[in-house]
Structures are given as C-alpha cells and as structure tokens.
Image 1: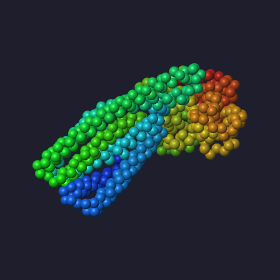
Image 2: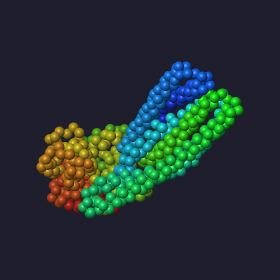
Image 3: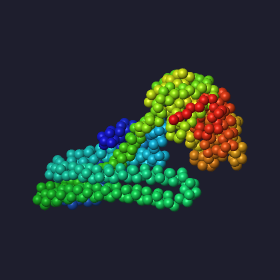
Image 4: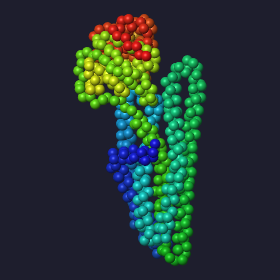
Length: 546
C-alpha cells in the first residue's frame, strides 16, 4: 500500500479535530515566543550584572519578569498538550465508530476471514497507535517549522553568521530522521504482524482452554504462546533500538551544531566584534533552535507506528460489505414463499460454490436442504437473508425480487438460527428475548418449552436469570443450542431459517425439537439445513445440493 494513500487517509481525520490542533499549535508557538523573550531578559540581566555593575535590587524586576514568563510558558505548554490530546481523542472516537459500523456491515464471508483476536487488536491497539500521530507528530511538525523560524528572526539582526550556521545545519536533523525512520517503518510493520499473531493465539488459547485441558495440551500451548510473546518482545526491542539510535544521531547533530556556533561566538567576543549580551542570547537560543526538530524526530516514530496501524485499518475498511440492495419496497407479508431462479454464487477468493441453482420453498411447510458439507447450504441461507448477493439469477420472495425489498423490513420477517449461535453474557431470559425484545416472561417460557429446554432452565439455581456466560460457557452444548432455538421460536416470524438445529443434541431431544419445528411449519415457511435424514419423510420439499 502506498504511503501517499495512508497519509491521505490519516489526514482525512484532521477536519474533526482541526480546532483543537490549531489551538495546540498556536499555544505552542506562543510558548516559543515567550521562551525567546525569557532568553533575552536573562541574557541582559547577566550582561548588566557583569559589565554594568548592576546589583540585586536593579535586576529584581527582571527576575520577577522571568519567573512570570516561566509560569506563563508552563501554562501554555500544558494547554497545548491538553488540546493535542483532545484532538487525538476525537479522532480515535471517530475511527472506532467507523470501524464498528464497518464491522456491522461486513458480509459473513469477510467476517469469517478475520480472527476475533485480530479484529479486537485492530479496534483497540490499532486505533491507540494513531494517537501519537495527532497528539504529537502533527502539532510538533508545525512547531518544528514555526519556532526555529521565529528564533532565526531574532538572531539574524544580531549576528547573521550564527543565524546562517543554524539555518544550514537545521536540514541535517530531518534528513537523518527520515533515513533512520524508513528502517523503523519496516520494523513497525513486522511488530504489528507479531502483535496480531499474539492476540489471535492468546484469544484462541483462552477460548479453547477446556479442550486443551482435556487433551493435556495446556503446557504445550503455553510454550507456543510464550514463543510468540518472545518474538513480539524481540520485535519491540528492535524498534526501540532504532528509535534510540535515531535519538543519538539527532542529539549528536544538534550538539555539534551548537558547539560550532559557540566556538565562532567565542572568537568574535575575543576579537571584540560582539556584545556579551547578544552573544549570550544567541547561545541560550541555539539549543532551543534544534529542540523542536529533535522532538519531531521522537514523534516521527509515533508517526511510523500510526502509519503501520493505519495500513491494517485501511485493509479492513476495504473488505467487501454485505449488499443490502437499493430496494425501497417495504416488506409486509403474512406468509412467505421463497424461490431461487438460476442462482450462482462465487466466494471472494474465486471458488464457485453454487451454480445455476433453482428451487422453490413453499409456505407454509418445511423445506430441507441436504448435501455434503461445503456445497453451499449455509450460503443459500445467507442469500435468503440478503447478506450476500448472487453473481447471477434472482432470489424471489412471493414472486418479488428480494433486492427490490427494503433490507430492514425484510429481516423483520425472518427468524434465523445459525450453525454456531452466539450467546450473550447475560441472563438466559435476555438471550431468548434477543429474538423479540418486547417478549414477556410468559412468552419466554413458552418458547423454551417448544425448544425442550424449559425444565432444565427451571432446575438451575437462578432459573431464567442464570447468566449464560461468554458465548454460553455456563451452559452445556445441547442447552446452548436449545436456548438459541427458543430465541428463534420467540421471534414469531413468517420465515424460519434453521442451520442444523439438531447439531449436538441426542436423538431423544432432537426428535422433540423436530416435532416443534414441524408444528411451526404448519403456519410458516421453514427452510432447514439438515444432515440427518430422519426428518426428510415429513418435509414438504427436499432440495439436494450437489
């Protein structure tokens, strides 16, 4: 990815934070001007004391003035950093909102290509990495241009030779900063890859902790996590090594330049070509001339980290979104009939999964989709949901093109049970109510009865108020599946989509679940992905996917 594209993307967020950035820069420049005034007052105090025999009483007003200038500078610097930090907070909030909205709009195929650990790392650490670009680099970039220019403005009238030396040596600092920064950029990229890998591996280990213990693989996995952590630590140290080297080079260049100015001024004082006050004023300001440039070098590494993180965020933004279509017709159906007309679909990586598929799913009634794993049965459900668009052909709803319908109103007509239903870390009742927020507790109980899980929930110490845990970890696999099924039942939608509802259930419970599904199919269109064939004789329609 080109640096220009990344920088353009980062700079696109300047507008929301422009007021704070302008205030931060303005206050920083004001603090720099006060520094010049402070240096001038101090230089002439020393000159007056040494050469004009001024006593403490004579210079006391100027000393109080210096104290006032120091306090004012401290306040201005604090305010400058406050506004730059506020700018970064605003940008991070905006980026996180955009990332979250993007995550909501991704099609299921794109989501499955990203690990949870990687996405969490991107939204949390990735966004944090751009903080330094807005809170440090951008304000310092402006200060590195304005403050040295202001110092030269005061130095040139006093001694053009010293001003010329400062002017000619100043470009060496950003030059070395860029040269070394290029090396740091590649190391930052490698570091970002390592932290992504570590996040993915650690989250994977936490989620599979029970399985690891069952197979006595905990120590082996711990060694793998330790190895990845060590690689990340080494990568971080490599970046820090380059950062310290960069600081050393910049400090060396600034020190040598100040030394050259000091030597020349010393000779000119010896020859009587300069007043001591002017010479001392220039010597005080010479290190301050290079300070904004050296600080820019420090923040340049923050910029490199921000660029590395921004590249990953841009790649995430470029993932294909689900295509809700431009339909405006509000879906208002009491019953639903689905028809596939010569549907073809290809995965983003190029694998054609469905080719010229046609079938009807009449309603009311049960339509079973059967076929070997990996032949597109789940993809068919996603096409019906409108989460993905076919390459060719049409999905018809009551003889209307699905993509002519308003996406939101269409989803209101569907209850969907995915292959791996997700449980929220809330009460069981709240998990069931996810299907319909306004459902009463009596309706929750009825849905649980249909899903054949009511008695088991009632036997729990807190009943329906039992916390399901993260992704249902406090429930057994069968209980989790049936709670998700109850969530589907409570929605009371005219179209029910079920992706292997009997998975993980014993035959007795599965038979009872199938009875509830068949009961629903008397009044609704039910489309079910099925692997076992015991329900097929009772289905109204069977679609074999080959």
